[in-house]
Length: 288
Image (cartoon, rainbow, N blue to C red; front, side):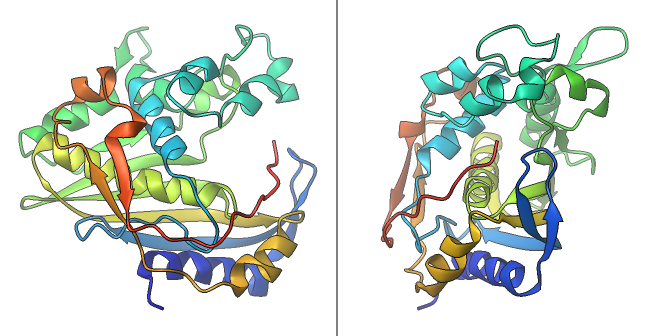
């Protein structure tokens, strides 16, 4: 059965199983089967939503997390309030962060992800809003070849609980069609990748919608793609044995028209998947 978005995902998983090299991960203490350099793409214009069907997958938390990034959230409680629990562990169970004198207390994430996107700190102490610059330019039909939002700020790594994994997004305007290229340094393929795929797709769809352009393709580039040792049997012996169902489509509330909308009233419930059919869930272990 044809399913273009998921076929790419499954081919990457099979490549890691077949060609991966074992690497010791010092942060988690768990070995990883690893490959370098993976490229995926998502046809946002044709609404081929890359939601995994070979296991039951959930998309609303991934969209909620993206909304938190776009709002510049820096606290796990803020993410929980909009329906995303992915930051609880990194904010409150990461021992290096718990020992960090820059941590402000329970649920604090520090200067990670959306903080850098909305409040990049300049040498004079003022802030640069990367996202607003990109939205303003694209709304005026401007692509200066630097429509880039990056979360990767090496000068402030010690001020946050986690270095960003998917760290940079570049928008490209060709005529009236908007494309996105997203770069990821590290990817937990069984657990994290479907979150990342969803966020690439939704980010392009949203920015195209609020800037008045047609969405084109999202290009997703991963440097280090890995499967943890304790995830491998489930991936190799269960998920990769399943046949994918057709790709679903995503419906986004057409009333979302501005960056201010994203900052104020938009919620995960303004996004709905249609035509989703899946195999049963697989509970992959998560490495903190």
